[in-house]
Amino acid sequence: MANTAYTVEPIELMDGTVFNLRPLPIKHQRQATKKLMDLFQQSEEELKDKTEEQSEDELLEVTAYCLNAMKKDWPENYDFTEVLDIDTVYKVLYVCTGIDLKKWAQTLEEMDQESLQKMVESQENGTTTSQS
Image 1 (cartoon, rainbow, N blue to C red):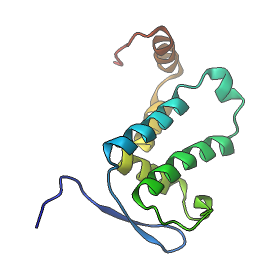
Image 2 (cartoon, rainbow, N blue to C red):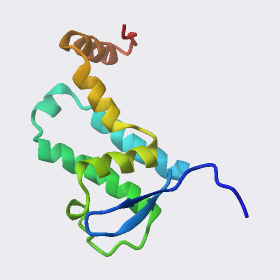
Image 3 (spheres, rainbow, N blue to C red):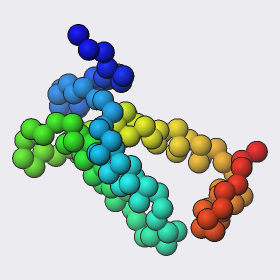
C-alpha cells in the first residue's frame, strides 16, 4: 500500500454531504491561488465599490473551483451558497491552496491603520517592509 504525502480532511457540507478535502494538484492549485491573489490585489477604488455579498461571491467562486477540481460529478448547477458557510469556505481554501484566509483576516484586523497603510503603499511601490 502506498503512502500519501498529504492529509485528507473530511468536511460535512450543510446539506449533510461528507466530502474529503485534500490539497489540489499543482495545476489547479496555481489557478486557485491566482484567482485569490487577483482578489487581494484589487485597487482601493474597486474594493470601495464592492458589497460584502460581492466579496463573498468571489470567494465562493474560488471555493467552487477547488471543489470542482477535486470532484467532477457535482450535480449540474449545484448551488454552493446553499451548503457552505464562511468557515467552511476558509477551510476549503486553506486545505486546497495552503492560504489561510482566516488567519490573514485576523492579522489585518490586529494591525493598526498606520501599519496597514504602509503595507499597502509598499505593495503599490513594489517594495517590501518588515512588520515590527
